[in-house]
Amino acid sequence: MTLEPEHLIPPKGYKTTFPIQEAIDEASKKLSWDDNFFVGDEDVIAVFDYDYALIEEFDTSVRWLSCCLSFIFPPAAACSLICLEPCFLKKRVQWDVYSKHLCITRGKGVVLWI
Image 1 (cartoon, rainbow, N blue to C red):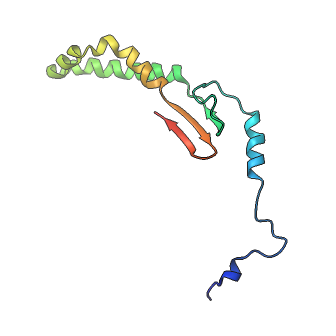
Image 2 (image 1 turned 135 degrees about the horizontal axis):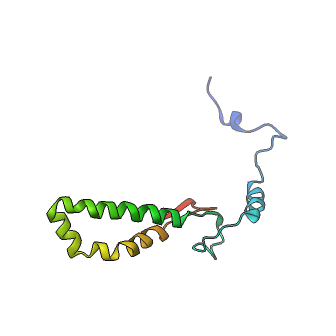
């Protein structure tokens, strides 16, 4: 059996569209978020907030561990000290953590800023 173009046309009275835009607009009015990165962007439907403090605490502990473990291999320790890794570790972690944002938009879908 082959499908001809007339088989692809829905029967009369069949609802082919769903008022999705109205449903999205209504649902997005009820949502709230704390991340102000996407303020002013009209296509944003929802923004997902990260728990920045928890991520920062975890990443800081992981980087301190890797910094301390680098002293097992002296060339890596020397490179770490020359680059002042221990001095700027906290600020680098904050920069990495607070630069991540996630939202859903109408035109682009899911947007992840890293």
